[in-house]
Length: 119
Image (tube, rainbow, N blue to C red; front, top):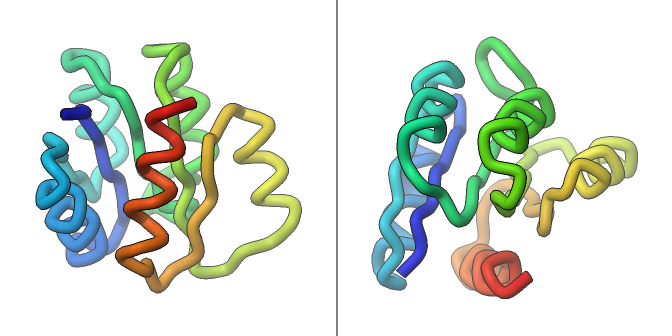
């Protein structure tokens, strides 16, 4: 069982990811607020973070940078509805293990989470 944090500005998207992964036995917390997610990360062990690239106050990349300061070993998956090569390169350069395009495909998400957790 892994501890996973999901951060998406759309609550329903975060809840969807949470439900999919909880059925696989993971402990998942979902946030829509960057500050609350960072505070949670500072106080709880995390194996994986799943971040939307477009958030309310910060970008997913900026949140990932902060999360890496808190926990350098944390693994990350970036979600986006508007994929670009530049965003993918930046996310992967920061250490994101995977990159998923919205709308989220359940099977793809499960596979990418499994791969990210093995890395």
